[in-house]
Amino acid sequence: MSKEYFDKARKLLTELESYEIGSAEELEKFRVLYLGSKNTIKNLMVLIKDIDPDQKKEFGLLVNDIKQKAKDRFEREKAGLSSSEEKLDVGDLTRPGEPVELGARHPISIVRKQIIEVFTRIGFTVSEGPEIEDDWHNFGALNIPDDHPARDMQDTFFLEKDPDIVLRTHTSSVQVRVMEMMPPPIRTISPGRVYRNETISARAHCFFHQVEGLFIDKDVSFADLKQTLYYFATEMFGTETKIRLRPSYFPFTEPSGEMDISCLICKGKGCSVCKHSGWVEILGCGMVDPQVLKNCKIDDTKYSGYAFGMGIDRITMLKYRINDIRLFSENDVRFLKQFTALDVS
Ligand code: PHE
Image (cartoon, rainbow, N blue to C red; front, side, top):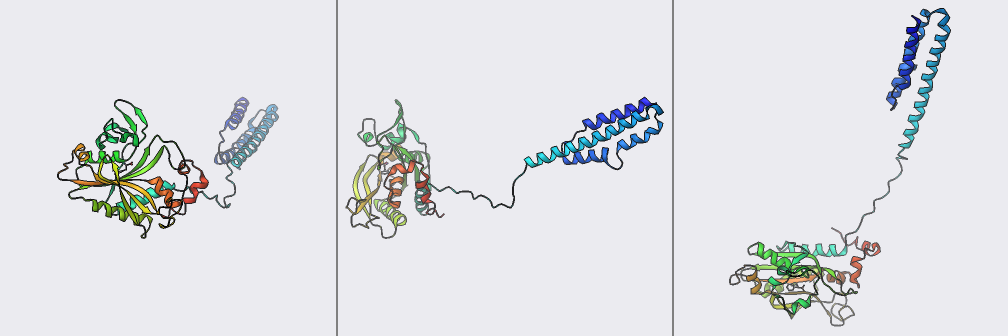
């Protein structure tokens, strides 16, 4: 008979020693079960009256030992739980937060956005094309055959030869893609990065950014081009800005021109930025050569158009009086963060 009670007591001991305690709730359950007012150890104590007299003492000691072990285990687990709670300490929740520092938009992005806004207001859409181009889209379709000296005007980075794959030297390649893809009327601008194999200096870089404009419809004339560019110049640089068109040459436009604006810095009086001429050049333009329309399967007897192309880097330098183009790609935060306040939108 007594043996059965001893076994029961020992079983209880193993149970309480292997009882799983991983959380405060489990610890509380343990406490109620083994140390609470109606705990199971007390039930063992009741059995003592039925134990053989010569074994009563031994049984009593065993039950006391179990009670002590339950208490010890409880204290141990309690200490363990509170120290792991300490590890989760999240600190003083009333402490003021650390401010998140906002980055700034790159000056090239600010000006690119402004240019896009000026043209989208008068109905231009925005189109983009690949920076890695084939020979046809960068040169061929634009009237620049293999042996044409115009290829030397734009020092090209070749990725593959025969057939040539190049880093586009201008965004005029996007003009060709748009004309091949959709029928006129076309009224679009294409902003993007372009590459030229030039020696890097304060005024030139091996990559820079352009916005190309293209308008194809019935009866488009040079007067339309001039008016659009005048609108652009006054929106972009202020209502007092004057424009001047000089004849120039591009293989894909005829006639071709270059547009100057009155110097923003000296207002035309003459300074070092405009080399004392009062004018600064900002873009190339012209009427799309009918051969280019034919190359892109557009009926040149029905349609005519104009195109223009400008450098975003150059315009940004003029607008913000930046004297070294290399600053744009050096990622110097002291330079970049100066433009935060300018980007109001
Ligand atoms: N693609 C020319 C350049 O990069 C610019 C240009 C575009 C000129 C469209 C005329 C018409 O220099």
